[in-house]
Amino acid sequence: MKRYFNTFRTLLKIANKKMFIIIQMFISSGLNNISSLLPPIATSGIIAMVTQGNFNGIWFYVFLYMMFYIVYFGSLSWNYYTYTVLADYYHLEVQRMLFEKVASNDAISEKISKGKIIETCSDDIRYLVDVVDSSVKASMSIVKLLIIFLIFMRYNIIVASVVLILDLLYLKLMNDNSKKVSKYYEGTRKYEDKIIDTLNQMLANLKQVKTLNLMPKLNVNLDKTRKRWKEQYKGKRVNMTIRYCIIPFIVYIGKILLYIFLAYLVINKKMTIDKLVLLISYFEMAITCTDSMLDNLLNLSNYGVRVNRIKNILDYVPQKDIDFGDVDNDYINGIVEFKNVCYEIKNKKILDKATFKIYPNEINTIIGHSGSGKTTIINLLYRLDRIKSGEILIDDENIYNYSKHVYSSNVSGVFQKPFVFEMSIKDNLSLVNPNFKNQVEACKRVGIHEFIDSLPKGYNTIISEDAHLLSEGQKQLLAIARSLLSKAEILLLDEVTSNIDPTTTTKIGELLKDLKTDHTIILVTHKPEMMDISDRIIVLDKGKVIAKGYNQNVYDKCDLYKELKNRTFASISEPN
Image (cartoon, rainbow, N blue to C red; front, side):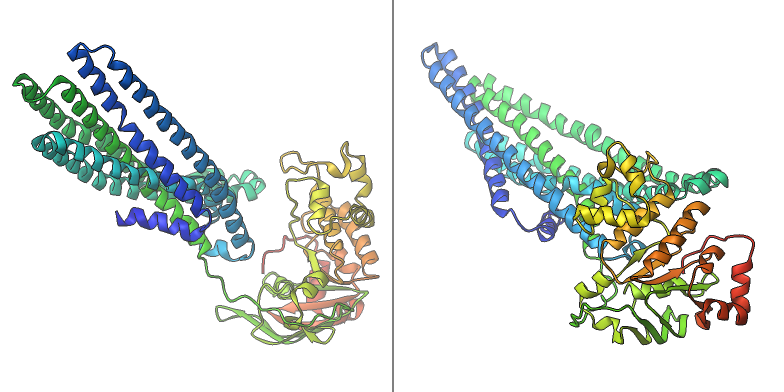
């Protein structure tokens, strides 16, 4: 019983409000269970009146019938109400908690699989209310069984003993079975998560999967996981068969023997017919009640798996957050400086005493081979990581000294793959700035306003991945517009033209020339045409700055820059 209680207790730790509603659920379920014990009393009374030939006495018991069922259905309605309130609370509140946890910990998918996170946020939370419901029903079933046993004790101690032995045997066999079913259920969920992980990776790279004909090899790997899932599922079904086909058969043999004994008592006039009907009704009720309790305990075992999955995500401990300071100066010019910055991951140097200065009103471009540290610089400026040594300054102030509000409102940007949510264009932009006039101005500046305005619903058009309404280039322009709405002085652009057509690349190049008039532009790129528009170039090689300065000067002196700029093909940049 301890593990069932732990599941309920864990849920209350995850979401600890609505205790008054939980108490109401216990009370309503208790009334419902107790009222379900009363109709057999009325049935027995009617049979007694019939055997005595007292027809008028029947109406009293008919009235009792009506009262019993009014209480029964009234309490059931109350119970449904409490279930609805709790379902809303647990689903919405815990989903919000999970979303916030995932959003605030970008490295969480390195410890917990994406498949598990998605399944937990979408599927597991639906069953949280059932943890309370099953706990309540199991508890009330125990109370109900105790009352039934006391009723049997009142009429015949031998019959009560037989009923108790049969029920305890049934409980023991079923409880042992529940542990096995729960174990195999957990196994099926584990391998389902792995399959969903592969599906997510496929969806993110469908073009590569198709063009490189990867599906046959993926299926080979998936078949291994499917085989493991099948083994776990088979184990679960075998134990479910034992639960519902073999164990009940053993108990029903005992039930037949009990009925034979009750018949013997009636024949030998040691028990009346009405008492026989009453006890048979209660015994059938005891079996039904035990089945209900066992089903709810089995459900609790399965729900325990779901609750623990949720708890694992909420208990995820990220690396220590990078604290913000208290410098509240919001007048940022946008001078960015790296002074002897060192950064490493697992004792591997990513940046080695990187030193350079970036100026406002210029396009400052960082170039280098994959793995040279380009994206690391962007991540450090986003404060996603902390340097090991050195300093990163904005307007001569350490970036870790700025307040969160000042920093986030002055440093913004766009990533390699543009992201837009499946909502209207207006709502996407409103995530940063709800002022519609400002949204239109930003879209006009990036050159996407006319296209949006030509759509049937304009800015109210819903963006859907399936509809392919926007090209990758248009999504990137929309992402830049959204970034402009933040009014940030410093714009970070990480490979924003890597996956878009040449026409849009040229368009973004022209846009950056315009944006530099009132921004500090920091661009990571591998495209020669984007290098052409740059004012200053910073060349990285294996984490070291090997050249920096005005574009033409660096080109004349740095062979690596010449190599990167003059190559005849455009490689897709890999994450650094």
